[in-house]
Amino acid sequence: MPDSSSSSSTGAEPADAPSLRHAPLGFAGFVALIAALMALNALAIDVMLPGLPAIGAAFALSDPNQAQTVISAYLAGFGIGQLLTGVLADRYGRRPVLLTGLVLYALAAFACVAAPSMEMLLAARFAQGLGSAAPRVVAVAAVRDCYGGRRMARVMSLVMMVFMAVPVLAPSLGQIILLLAPWRAVFGLLALYGVVMLWLCWRLLPETLHPEFRRPIRLDAIVEALGSMTGSRQTMGYMLAAGAFLGALFGFINSAQQALGEVLGLGEWFPAVFAVAASSIALASFVNARLVERLGMRVLSHGATIAYLALALAMIALERAGLLGLWVFLPLLTLSTLLVGLVFPNFNALAMEPQAHVAGVASSVIGAVTILIGAGGGYLVGQAFDGTLLPLAVGFAVFAAATLAVLFWAERGRLLRPSPPEAIR
Image (cartoon, rainbow, N blue to C red; front, top):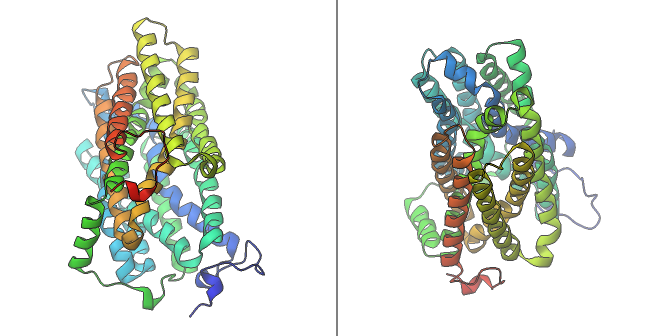
């Protein structure tokens, strides 16, 4: 059994001392592998954005907005997959669940390459989303198995630094592929990446969950966890708020190629502008980590949501006045996406805060509900695209307002004021 250094740090250990639980992988190798697993999901969403017009043309879609459903179908599978992945990984171990998920991810990507119709493509994308839930959930669980306290926080920070580079680079990678090959090659890249990750995890990543920590799947334990969640105003409020706010972000992702590439005329420059927006989220996440202990999660996330709504209303007014051109929209968009990095880390932490005793089930349910609400909202925003920026701006405003309404309920009207967790149940 691993010694105590595998789960907690001591003053005599260097900050990057490896855990025995992920041997033979060293510290750097473990961080790199976990980051690569996390990247599976972001890559599957963002790499295909430049190819949406080609997909629409290939299947002769009557409505150009239908091409966006390849993103929504994937997100739906990803959200539903998280409901069971955490429970299965706690019962059967990390490796079998992870490897099964990677097999499904890769096979579904190959099915996307060969899909003869839009319906088959959507079914394959849904299956790929189901498979991607395992790498996402198991990656975080493996870090928790191997490290604790500040060392765990350091590992996750390093992982997220690598992970945040994917949304920045993925659309550019997709654009390069489209310059050299048909749109199906994008899915071929995802299939290849899935196969490589399957091989690496099979060869290098051991089982990180110690046998004595495996938990049976018990209906009464799941019911207890769900009862704890539904009985907490804080958990329910911030879970629903995160889902509503995610609807605005997914609405942008669904509409990004059409809004930036077509309405604003960026064309092949679309990936570069998308990269700037994605980079602002990473920057804000770094700023949040520096400020959260000083200002508190509520002050930062509530203030960012209010500011997001103000920017969305400004976009609506400018669009109606015919003034929302490229050089007006892009700064407003960058500021909006920057605020995203001040919202989600804090919403997720606040939702989980009262659920330490049922963290596994709570994490799976919160992740699934958040993604599914966000995917549904993003689908509605994307399908409302009418060749102008107005539906996108209205979507931003509607979901920001909905987020504030839920926060107002969760905090009993006390926005922007720190309050002890026990005051909100």
